[in-house]
Length: 439
Image (cartoon, rainbow, N blue to C red; front, side):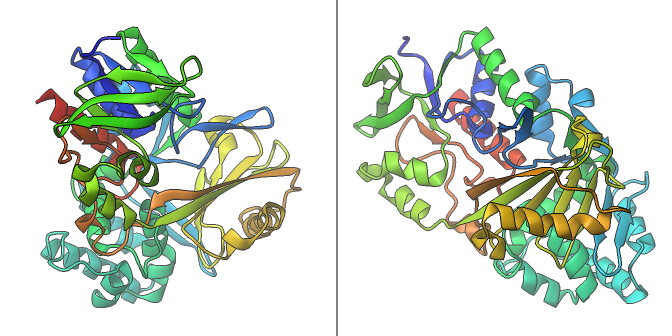
């Protein structure tokens, strides 16, 4: 194995993004993944005979780096992503329906708010006041506050918070509004709604998440001479004179494989990263930052109904319920009768067993159908540490992609991308790490 190979630890979207970019520039990469499959926290799993996602992932038009990278590895985004102009339907006592027309940004959002069904005049004025407040502050406050306080300052109404802003916050930040960072939310809001109308489009994958990018990324890397080691855990990093010199890995064929390298990207979840760096004195400050991170879960409930079961729309929201976002996988993935329900952040659902939770979700979403369908079977996926908690001043402790050790770089959605823990944030971090190496 060449000593010139760039080593990447972790094959989530961040690690794959870095590997693809480096491969594209003619570099040889060696990637280690401790699991038996790639994709990290965005991968496909089996539900009986079906391929489903370990969490229901969606993209938006503003995810420019994700879309660009998919094209690089040969993904046809026109067939693998179902593009829907912004249409949000959130069910409560009174449904809120917000639909954006084909107008330039941000006029499309303004029109959607003015014409939204389920809002009173005071709600419409409050929503416009919110947009003006964000623009006046250039989408960044000098002192970060919670999103809940942001809503209070901009005098948002109860229905707007409950049926529009809070659902959007939970889906993008995966952190309750009483804790979530206003500055991070404002950055996402700016990118989604103020540049191009298409940036707010919903992009729903029509294939399982592994086929959307990870599988094609691995094929691309291997086709260009890169090496992938699955079920191979990196046990340690060798640092000499403040320079990375090697990694030691435990693979299926070699319990102590030593790979010499002067360039290393670690693309692991924060808690796993810390296991590798704690013993190294030059990385003590980084380790202390990582220890300050907290985490939030995401639960996805799959409900199989008769094949003719359909939602009125491919994606619908709910408020004042455990269920938050509901997806019709029949209309998206051709998995007829299969409904997926996403519950972001912590809550009472985390103390329920799978059967009880599935039954409650089944009862809640019954109002979305003309006649309640018969539940055939269910499948609950719990990612207990799905994302870092995107709390107030979180950017102050998020590490840069570079480190105090020469040749050692970081990738992962937890690095300081200014984005929350999203696929786009992960990809951006991988690209940023690769650019540092290319310099």
